[in-house]
Length: 135
Length: 135
DNA sequence: ATACAAATTCAAGTTAACTTGAAGTCAAGC
DNA sequence: GCTTGACTTCAAGTTAACTTGAATTTGTAT
Picture (tube, rainbow over the protein chains, first blue to last red):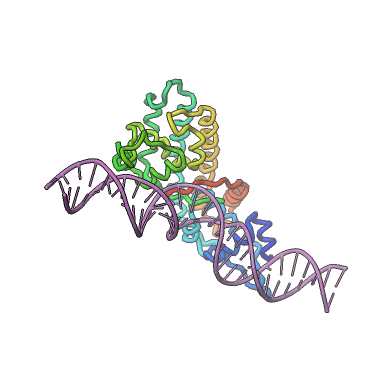
């Protein structure tokens, strides 16, 4: 496969593929002249990368989760990431409930509503962790 | 309150406060000489902003969710954002389960495991939506 | 009144994750 | 054999959300 086909199959721009290669996330089988030639399974690999990005892992995170070659996945790391995700889900759930309450709450001013105030406190106590930027 | 106190109370840098002002998210009561003077409730307002950031809204999003002045919250918008959040939670939940499975799965190669493949498909089908970057 | 910490403005720098542009190469179809 | 379109490299540009630095002013404590 050459890069155009991979781009179509994965939904990623060719520039992104070159960028991922530079980052060490993917690797073409070799070259035909100058042109990169990819194995068919690159598409799954890219899907895996997208999966990681989607759940909030940075490209560097992802890079450390599996080798640039085969699908060598570190199970321990995966489990840890699942736990991280679980925490985030719980947070978001609390936030969602808070938002719903705020939307429904009849208090003239949200700042007089104890439920809302509790929500703010929750948000405030959270230690911010960088979330990768998606385009 | 002057800016240093607000910074301490909110946990945000003074530079961030000036930046938020530039963006129209907050506004000091006035000035004492050159120095910004803030109302005490600015802290709650900032907590609200942090809340929004935390659940993945951009500063622009947040700006459109309430006026630069009082705590005028658009309930309809809030409900909509809660729904958005709910979707995201469901996605993340599926992802988390997928990750857990991948971590536990005994298939030699994840790409031969149907559960894992379903997960990849899920990730791939998702239309990416920009997530704001947190520092 | 003088030093000093804390404030001010404004421009420029930072990071992640890409994209864009310029300038060139190359295989394929007409 | 020549155009065309897909590829190549490399440097520079983009966006969000801030931060940093330089040069300057101001309020408070001694």
